[in-house]
Image (cartoon, rainbow over all chains, first blue to last red; front, side, top):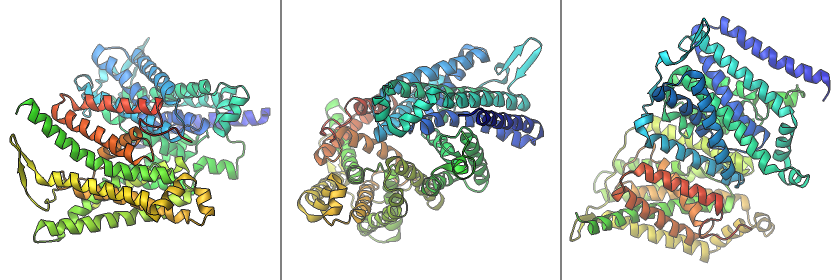
Length: 320
Length: 294
């Protein structure tokens, strides 16, 4: 890997972040609100992409990591009156512990069994949120009070009920995760994951502990998704079982496939595209999930590399 | 009602669930066994069967049995045709790649489900049973139709066993399952076998739906629970084993009946059951009755 290409890649990513920062001031209110959601959901998709794109593991249960972050942050804030930073940290901790346990069990299986096992663990998580309805209020969910969703840093007060602050917080989280992912996939760890994706048997023969690398990937992916969930709960002030349902395991899969698996910016592109398509469609029909279904089939049939994957193949070979 | 009669009621309800599950899981297991495709849209074929049963049976005036028999013929054929098309247009072009086909069948699930929501609506609608006989037991009366469902499922399973084990079609299917390439070399049109197997799997789900819909109701989301349960049955029973599927369906159906009649919290029971099945898949992937993978 030569220096010029590395510089180009970092410049591209910094330019994307700068453009998003500028968009925070230029976008009309409605679209700025939509984009705050897109940025947080893109973090979810980036976490998913780490596992699907780079490690080749297709999970059908990532809603549980998102929801672990959501509840891990939301419940202490709501019931114990924790501050935002502590709640956010609790969300991350919940996600990492869950990812470690689920990963250690589910990685004993491969292929189709892995998908079904992750789906079942996620279903258990979903049902658990319904079972403890005294604390979670189930499908109805909890509304986090705006008074709790603020931090005071000296004289500056950061309140997440303010849309402009919310956008900037989302952007900070997004940028941090994007740069971490970029660093990670270009580091030896990321290369090892790609090697496992291409030929696990050979990697094992070369002396790599593939189980450990995969477990590492599940945990990092789970923590990133939990960060997205915790941020989502705190930013939009709502925590509900719906986010743990199977739908939220399918959506990141769709976003990553549309944007391009194993591309660092694909999750953002896919999320933004699908959120806008669904936003538009739900104005026309209540059956917007039909669109999700059609998009899934269309992508796997005709567009298996996704938007940025195709761009990379045709024009920009250096795209990470 | 005392505990004994309540248990009997739970067992009867469990047998009805088991009958439904055995038929559905057989379809799922056949498709996975022969094609190595996990059909996530299987529950939607079930739902489609139920909705079509409602459409057909309301189209026929007169005795409900006429509409029921018509539905028994029309719904599985129509659902089979839909599945056949889906297989030819989508799954075949994906070369039956396991991950791509899962994603595609998830897409199919959403499309069928939301089409049903748009066309049929969000209401649950009842279908008249073909006959109304109450069998009076000493403690309670029980629907004769439910007993008919159990008997019909047993007949259908016996028929499936006969086809798989004793006919040429079954031989072709088993050969394709065992080794598709060698089967092809022996002149078996593997592509066509796949299409028919996929359609057959869907038809079994639709048949189960037509049988069960007079005692439940047709609703556009009704495919979800049977899908999960039949996954469970296939996993516990082990793949490709008809006997395992039937035993597992009995096990799951009966425990489901007992849980939903006697247990205090169905959610907790579902949590434990799902967790248990996930752990079975982790620690004993060949299922409780299946043999180790080749």
